[in-house]
Every structure is written in C-alpha cells, then in structure tokens.
Length: 208
Image 1: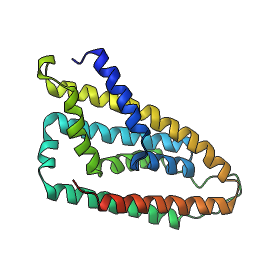
Image 2: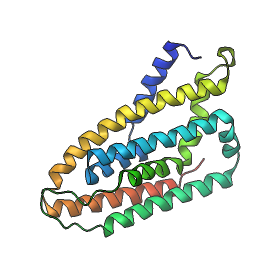
Image 3: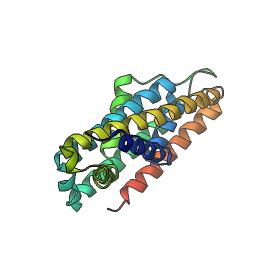
C-alpha cells in the first residue's frame, strides 16, 4: 500500500496535469458547451473509465508490450484521429434549428459516456504517459506493484473527475448563453468542429 503522503503529492500533481490544456479537457469543454452540463459529466465519466483501462494496462504489463510496438501506436492513433474527424463531421451536419434559448436535441447518456471512453482509449499518448509516469511512484518494497499502480490510477481518476467536472459545469453554463442566438449556435458548432479537426491532426501526427 502507498503511504498517504505519496498519494497526496500524486493527487496534487494529477490535478495540475488535468488543468493543463490538452485533448481531453478541450473535448469536455466543447461537448458541455453544446449539449449542457449533464451531458458533459457523462463524457467526463467516460474519460475516467478510459483512464481505468490505461491503468489496468500498466498494472498487468500490457502497456510495456504496446510501448515496444510502433505499429500498435500508429494504428491506435490513426483510429483516434479518425474518430475525432467523424465527430467534427457530425457536428457540422447537426441542425441549428429550434428557438433561441434551447439546446439541440440531447444525446442519450450512454452515447455520451461511450464517446468519452473511445476518446480516451484511442489516444496512445495517454497510455504511454501512464506507462512512464505511474511507476515513478511505486516501489516493490511496499507490496505488489500492480496494486500500487491501481491505487495511483484511482487517485488520478479522482483528480480528473474533479477538474473535468468543473470544466463541464462552467462551460455548460457558458453554452446556455450562446444558445440564445441561432447565429451563436451555428458558430459554436463550427468552432467545436474546428477544435476536433485540430485534435485529430495533432493525434495523427503524434510521435512516440
């Protein structure tokens, strides 16, 4: 088991990392602005579930196999980039109709949750980061390293839930203001699509 002071220090670092602008928090920001706070939280829960998958991969040694395979990295990053491009296309096709002050027809919670999972799991940079980062806080002298890794992953997920949840809340509130204008809705969709295309290009050109 990890000592409490190590967990507290790790939590602080994880919060700072979650606050750093990146694909996941930008994804939460845009989804919440378009669909609302509740929708944003389902996306956040999906992202946290994806982190659980990355943590488990590190704990059982699968991440080491992935890190040694340039082909696996390329396939996964291209899949993630294609998914982001697909989301951009969907947003551009979404109707802007409806009266001022109303949001688009909400997506089902399950679809939003799955969107967060896919977004996170198809980003190989997250897995490689966990593979390099989490072991720095473990020690065989404290017991099974796999158990320590899962502890750290749980703390990282808690920090992500806290930070990304706040992003979903505030961007959802800002999105409500934009829904008062059909023109603002249209521009919000265009900006979201542009952000997703940018994230797709960044992921597609990412190196190990």
